[in-house]
Length: 135
Length: 320
Image 1 (cartoon, rainbow over the protein chains, first blue to last red):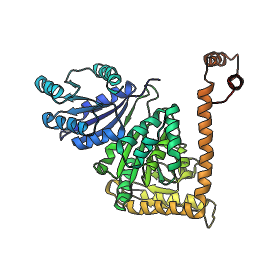
Image 2: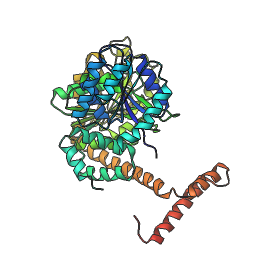
Image 3: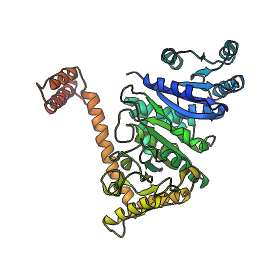
Image 4: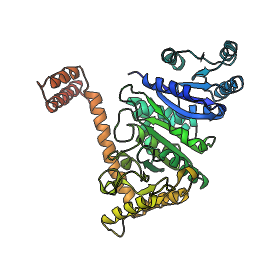
């Protein structure tokens, strides 16, 4: 039987725009995934602890505040410290290509989806990658 | 496989071990059964508290406040929050954590969201098993929040020691309060959002309804308590009442009777699950087709599957 993919969707930092996060949550639900939605203003500590308790396969972070180069590396560092390297971490929001490259290559994030990425593309990426990351 | 090591890690309070164990029982099957077999002897110590009520009545907020109250009393608190799965995609959006932010960062609390995965009684198939694991992980109270419930999602009363039924003002006239179902399973009634108009009237209707019931002097008297969960008002009294109810169960011997009834249901559920798993052979699809075409009835087909299984067992010489 196909195993249900569990995803934590969270918004790190202080911006209050969660429309994108909700659209993603809905799209992943419609693709058969279980989405734990934690809401706004999550600290990196809260995100990693929630991911641990929920034993998720994927963390999806939505960030529009511009603080991504501070908050996202912190999430990755805490995940490593908690030995949760096997969790797939993706982000979406307003993140420049240069920053995206640094986040992926230096901090170990798996993918960054900018504005214009289709929900279909994101669903496909997660379904393809989860099997690889956790087996 | 031997799960003794995982159980030891659970009992030593390792949070990741608990998280992984919970996933294992959610997936079900032989691995989940082996894990539960190892866990079972260590369980039976936690106070299981169910919280049920209609969508939007404030269950998650209430659970968060109750957890805080118990934490202040020095207890460890586990939370299992169930939300519905989509009947179409099987997916789910589990949003109960949004209302539990105040518990973040406290290592004496562990929150797990769970999708109902097709179950209709207000809980998921694995909810009771998850509660056993939290029990083994030494949580003193395990709060179980059901799917937003209507009138007949009463599974929680069979799983929890103490069931809180949450109501809010403005949900309907007073005939609602004498209908069967969810209102009958309350050990404690909570009228939440009590700062709203009509709260006292709802409480009064519930109290009147309770007086219609049988009057046994030794029976638990179901209290009706008012809360404003968003501000924490009334939550200390609620925790005190829940503790009192649990003590009443122990003293009156009811706890033993409940455990016996629960054991019977667990055995029956386990038997159903195993029977389905073991009899689901190659004949399954053919029988399903025949039943759909009305050339066979479901009972005859079920009997045939059971008979085939019995024959198979005797050929193999030993039951497994």
